[in-house]
View: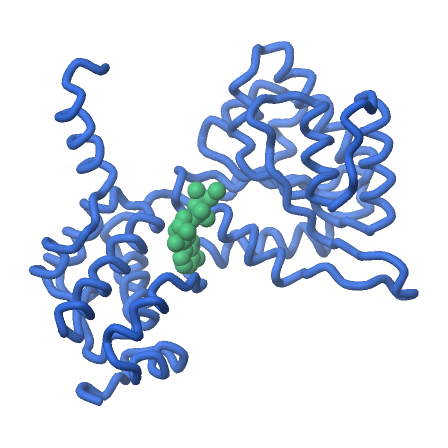
Length: 305
Ligand SMILES: Nc1ncnc2c1ncn2[C@@H]1O[C@H](COP(=O)(O)OP(=O)(O)O)[C@@H](O)[C@H]1O
Ligand SMILES: [Mg+2]
């Protein structure tokens, strides 16, 4: 192998042994980078899961960050750390951490339907909201859920004020009734929505996953991506101030965009027989950042505002 591949993780090193084109499908695999902000969020979740259940006022968390910045990835990682298992007698499932989707509007009924869906429970569309609520609470107790994580909580803002208030009431009820921590994931709009309920605001501790800036943390993130992309030579993305700020600018400071850009660059490198990413590859790869996509859109539809 050309290059000593010491910059790669063991898994990436094994893939880097393959011929270039056989490495391409591996670029689509999802891997987890344990950056400090994600670890801080996982630590908060862990503490809430350990000390929260059973308390009269269990702690609630709100993981806040822009779209495409790793909120769902944190929740999925946490779920994998606390996976479902069979009950002691083997007759039902234990689901310590339930991850569910907030419906596209703050409807209590649709919320319970979504919870039941996450619990793999059959839902009868004819059931009353009360019945869905009873069914959800009962099931959450049976499967011994100790934390409910609600993704896309900012959808709260899409309904009229009265619906939002009713929904926030229901969240408060759920936490009180089950005595387990409720965790929301959402953009800053979720935080604004939660703030509109005085009693809830101080019960949802914000845990930020902010946009990335040009600092040591970002340099480390780039090194972590380099460790995971199966290229035989080092690209030194983190060490080059020019590349670092180029990647930060084009990605808009979002980890999902950084991932898409570097994956696309690695694919072009492999297709052209290169073993590292440089400025030319970054410029030519098939990636358009959020700003670039917006500019292309506006150029194609100049009259749309
Ligand atoms: N910790 C991480 N390690 C590796 N890739 C990540 C990580 N967090 C986010 N990503 C990348 O960013 C993308 C968007 O993350 P996601 O969790 O869906 O964002 P959000 O829920 O904030 O919109 C993921 O598909 C993944 O490619
Ligand atoms: Mg998400």
